[in-house]
Image 1 (spheres, one colour):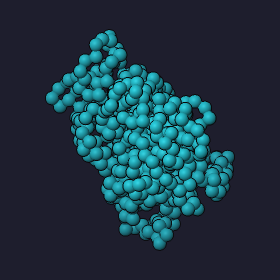
Image 2 (spheres, helix red, strand yellow):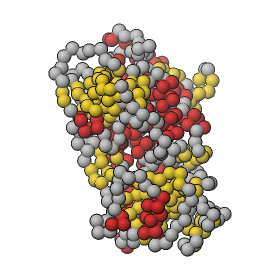
Image 3 (cartoon, helix red, strand yellow):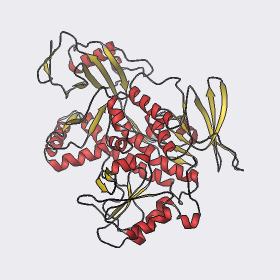
Length: 534
């Protein structure tokens, strides 16, 4: 990446250039539009993708989508009903959440092409400029702007913006051009996945298991481990079977050699199953075939001046089912902070908290996905004992809840400045039922607009009076709720709690400090009435 000499800030083509129109980039574009910012999305591929890289969406992002009023729309597009995940694959075993009255994980069966189409529609409805078939080839920055060299259908051109965000995947050109190190490990495993119909020779039993010629009864929703690898089997829908294999690529065994650039075929998947199981497993018509390797990598920094990273460009995890959740949550955390800087009211250091908070969240996801590597890759008696002990631990409720929160990302507590914080500070805001003079509402409904909120739950005029200085940025609501967790909650646009008042305790000084820390100077100082452009 080259650095331009600093100078007078020119008029820009956009506030933020987003490179990559996957779920992370499109979610970022939507959140920026909610905050009154002009995003421009560049996507190398000319059309929406048709081949799914992921089968669905799960984790804490589903709660956030509900807080934005989008979850019903997404559920309506699902290929199967939304449901709690009673059993979750974890490092070659299954964690059984069915003993819990409310399983901590939910999932949407929403193939990635459907997800991207929904996010694309939402971003465009909000006014985002999404340009497909336009590839960023180079980027430079100075103290005021970023310039992207773009190759489009009509030839090369340049764009300028206040910021540029790389949402362009694990092989991120943005990260490469910015010179941001991406340390980590690439594992020797080759993973193959197929979604197939069930051939007539295979019988589905009443409990969902399969009777397979030559193999007998095969348990659905289970993994079979042999000395050649791991075979997984489960139902995606009542008609579609999902089969997978995991093998180590060996230089001594040409049969395991892989050309990563060649598309996977049904024959390749069947050959892999035969190597792992030592027998033929009949497969029907393929609906999706894919091959991938696992990496454990995290960018050293998510920001370099006016260039930032989100999603797979910032982190890659050695497990399926977590990347979309982490990437889209990156976007929600980043958008309002970029908007604050662009609108001119961001407190010192606000944008740097994006790296601090989301790098922490990425490290938590890396923790449990690398633990899955240890469970998955071990093939000796000690590894078998580890898996058995692991499953015994999760016969109890508390460990089950803890691992569920870790997988979903619900356990994240962002570090808050200062000391003596309320236990809720830094956590995702609970969806309280709220009773107001206008009727019943909820925290989820109040957060549809992605505005900061001071929620007064104890009729505290002293706190509402302090918040008047930030009324141009922070919405104030008074309500009652059963078993109130605090006298008041200050909720950021990403639905995390910036501050909470202990029951019946003076809190004016700490509220004023929290408002200044996250939302800048009060109205009396800035004189601004509206920080958002129309």
